[in-house]
Length: 279
Image 1 (cartoon, rainbow, N blue to C red):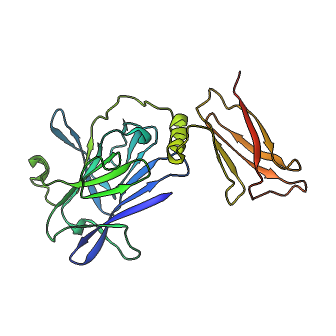
Image 2 (spheres, rainbow, N blue to C red):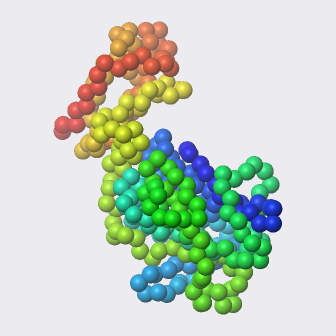
Image 3 (cartoon, rainbow, N blue to C red):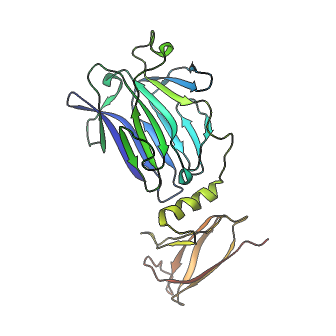
């Protein structure tokens, strides 16, 4: 995981606010977390109707998962699933969630460690920010967290609808879209996995990763297959053999044993890999 965090800085003190994780070695999913204790008022906003829907208060913060395929799930808010463009194919900025806090008294003090980024908040003022995902440099923002092929932008906004503010000055407001850009998932999980690795590596061919610390090779297919394929692997050292083969419709992984039966953790070389997904 690649991680990043944002704290609020107020009067010389730091308060935990947002955390981000990107599964760069796996499926390329992005996770956005609002880190806090206490209670949160959940709200959803319909940009077309212009109305706010206030839901029951829930404890703590939230966690949003943005899968590489574009499926976005709002955990700890209202549990909905929305459909956005795949992360590898973002061509403009899309608003994911907005958070408005009445002040640092709504956040947890940072007692150890440090954040990667800081946002200043004057004492006694409400802080409202919008979180968007888009191409690197797509919009001007107060803060941008850049990943290899997309960016998460943090932008302040000044005003909340009057119906949220009146009688609720101490509420934390979480605002999410009622609908996404699409009404269904537009890229399969397997295709998104492949596209993520192709975009990171810069190749549309089959990708072979060297063995990790446990000696596991991983092969990312050039395209998603109908079924997990039959596999023929020829190793450079004829005294070794492939073991623990795991096949899916978009990648495979395996280990190698030597002539004594011991696992080979180093890279011994692969002469060829042939995939056959015929029925």
